[in-house]
Image 1 (tube, rainbow, N blue to C red):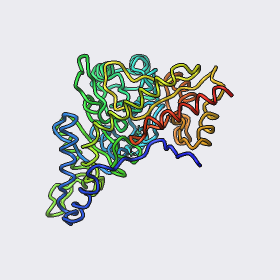
Image 2: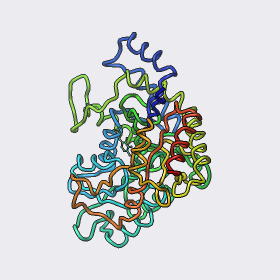
Image 3: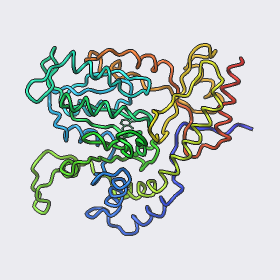
Image 4: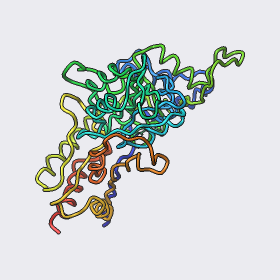
Amino acid sequence: MEEKFIPLSVPNLKGNELKYLTHAVEIEWGSTAWPYVTDFEKCVAAYVHTPGAVACQSGTAGLHIALQLCGVRREDLVLVPTLTFIAAVNPVKYAGADPVFMDCDDSLCMDPAKLRSFCEEACEMRGDSLYHKATGRRIPALVIVHIFGNMADMETILSIGKAFHLKIVEDATEAIGTKYTIGPLAGKYAGTMGDVGVFSFNGNKIITTGGGGMIVSQQEELLHEAKHLTTQAKADEANFIHDEIGYNYRLTNLQAALGLAQMEQLEDFIAIKERNYRLYRELLQDVKGLSILPFRAGIRSNYWFYSLTCEKPFPLQRSQLIEKLKKDRIQTRPIWGLIHEQKPYLGSLTWQIEKAEYYWNRVVNLPCSTSLTEEDVNRVVNCIKNYEKC
Ligand SMILES: *Cc1c(COP(=O)(O)O)cnc(C)c1O
């Protein structure tokens, strides 16, 4: 008998999704009033402790808006990580600005020490703003990504933001639910510490609406502006008067109905993901050359993706490991290609990128769906241990 296929990360829609969706269809009230959108926004805001939240079509759309809220304009430079999904960077170009690529540290998130050295050595303050010395371009903002549900070092990042007058966009698309548990930021959720944070509800994220996003901020005026920009910037809705170039970035009511049902299950999903993460770690700890990367100490991660590093003396290279697992009907994937090496970004400014190259070569993401059973984890591990012997 053929073994069951174990996917990398698939949605889990076994809660109130169908009930709310059915209701959303039955009330036929989708075009002018959006009860589920409002409920979903309130639910997310209450969960992450922000004064509000603005739903949008995708994490990418949310990041585009976030950059505008942070005052990014044409010809500006924006500091971004190179080890991330490209959607964290493309919105910088949508805004007419250019990225400067930064390295990661062992958390896979941006290295704050290198971020600081870039600001100190390659830039200077002119009046209230940071400028890049070699190009003379203004740097108003920074995009920090909480990679795979880990937390970037926000304490240090926030102090650097303050020192160099950088607005901080938190790409928390992978990290809804991740929070500090100890230290000065205890209780703070990923996405809520910078100026603007963005979550994603794409199909492979920990909770999903098929596609969707959410913009959060502690600053009510920014939330107000986010809602304005995502809904065509209407100044006087009844008379079709608009005061800015807005966007049709609103989430639909049907998607919000799904989102609300998913939010109800988020803590349960995190508990399952944590259990499976711990199991992988325990079962793989003796395999030489392999290790499951830890999440930062002092946080409760959402455990979105599990990162396995693969190097000698493990007998297979990372790509061979992925191929072998595929033959055994287990889906994994390599970490993203570095963004500064991708065609649209060749020739971009970079700063001391080393660690990102190291991890780019070695990281594999293991199956992590919330429907993954302990038996499934055991099968993945047994396959890997068998390859070790051959
Ligand atoms: C998923 C993701 C995005 C984009 O979210 P979408 O909802 O798919 O547009 C942005 N940045 C990172 C790091 C992501 O993983």
